[in-house]
Image (cartoon, rainbow, N blue to C red; front, side, top):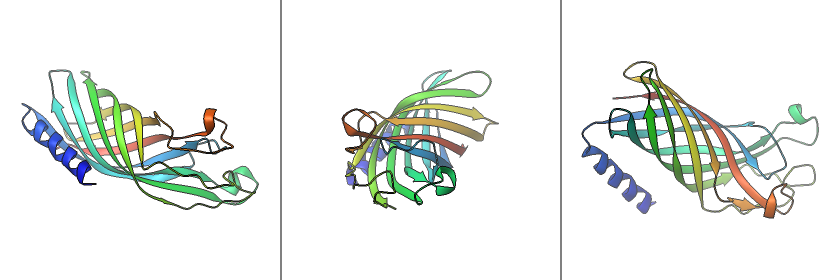
Length: 197
């Protein structure tokens, strides 16, 4: 955790030296699934929030650095699948994304980048023959994701944001995964609200 905080303050110091930079608190939610748990659909909802710093590079491009708390995982509701019992996996991460953004004249910003994610906690496991994960999965303590990001600035201060992210490397392995080599991956959509100072 100490290395994560050090990295955060290094980037903030760099951005503070840029000609133009802005900070924004973020609040939103994830719609998540785990690829490899033999379920489908973004049925796991989790909290997503933190802070972002933008550093303007030129008229159209900027760098974005974030520090986030993010709940991911997987969920099955028996009312949807009509079998078995309710099932949920909750994975809690600290995320540190770094993105480059292209801003057009209409207030739309298109971004892409990568995020290092440190696993804080796992919870909500129910194993057994009636659940998709009938054996424990050992999750890695970290995850690296690719991000595609779309931000719309309503005005000079308020913005709404849609984000897709996916694990570049497996976050764990499961013998009965439908993916190659038993791969298990985070797969999520994120909906966020920003206020820019």
